[in-house]
Image 1 (cartoon, rainbow, N blue to C red):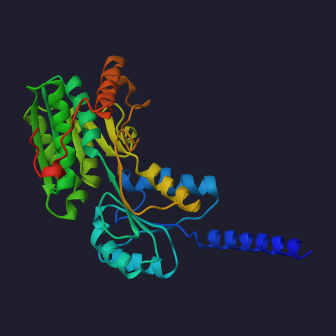
Image 2: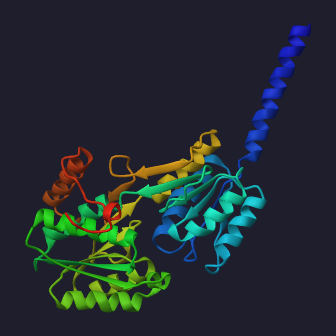
Image 3: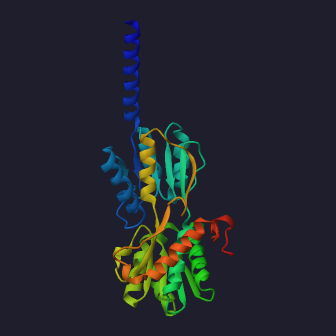
Length: 333
């Protein structure tokens, strides 16, 4: 009888432990100031990460969007105080705020997308943008009729130059003599929210001969895409699949699967699996891709599709080495 009681008590204890663990799982996501409907980075996290996870698991994810830059740290502090964990922060702009808050709340687990915060309770999700940019650069060179392609970046920082360098490498891998033009919109975060300037730079590049432009410029990219449509040129989207925005104009999009990463983090955490530190999502790991769908199918021939897939496999197999601008702070290749 004592043995039976002991087993029953153990079962109850295990059950209570499981309930406690479930109760402690309070996931949250903190978007950047552009929010979750930016038709880019934040929207991918929201639709393919947060919404998909909630639908599949039945677990509610708390969402926070700061109204301005100063509210990033305040919002994270509030989420940590209220017991949310893990807390996913969307974008490199959270780096300094997260470093302060994560150190203050060592028992809370955090994730940052697109930056590295070296603390024992932070997972840093980094993507091989240079590999994906190489692919869309190769495609741009394949379809260019003017033998010239271009790039418009948002804020002039190493991360954006990483996109640009990969794109240039991909284009010149296909055609070593192709013309290449590059401009950055500005040196502050506001460069990601200036579509008028984005359009001006794109039009300037078109006047120099470019007929395919790749924008890694946040909301400023909308101006680049509109300019391409107005001028009868082709554009390439970034971060999420933006092909639908201007069908017939968007050649493709360089996709960072940040939504899938968000889903994976929440799903793993729910099962008790969380590992802080650096987590690199490259082509081989399924963290990067290029978009082909009904909106751009007519722009990409079967021959070009197979050529891009072959290049992707060569990168995965190590036959093509794509230089990472952030490894040396230059684009020598």
